[in-house]
Length: 222
Image (cartoon, rainbow, N blue to C red; front, side):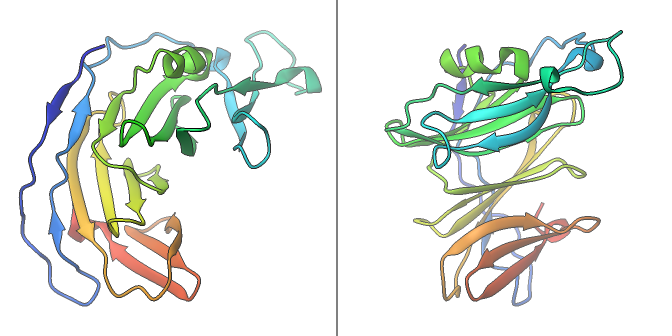
């Protein structure tokens, strides 16, 4: 699947305030052609229960639950199964796995060989083959370390320890096409960022460090 590279770095307006660092538009994105759509029956699609990374298993795995139409409403052990994501654990690292409301999975993979971060969007039934064929929905022309997802506002956030940059990607819910982006240079943190968190019911994002946290109002950034 071919993708067109956009390599453009435009400076946009910089908001004022102590929590409003330099912000640019992040346009180093390669996007796959738009999907033709799907008529998948949500009742037949797997539900993500848990993600286990290489610190638990030699190969990253998803724990999924599936109950087909017509089956008993009672969930039993037979409804649960594991799905292995066969990446090259020597050169690739899964940053995070999320599930959208339509039950498609978002898998974010950092590829050290290609020096890029790949975002896969697929139903669980086709996820392993899509990753194996290396057909990401889009790629970011940089390596990142942390990822978070705002399910309400459809915003994906990735953070780089090396560059001290926070990238926000706003996307359409149905097509998962990028409609806006922001690259925020982070300074003044006294310790390494450990986690990205979105505050439920608000427009705020937190970068959590060992010594505290830094908050950002997404309404001012995108």
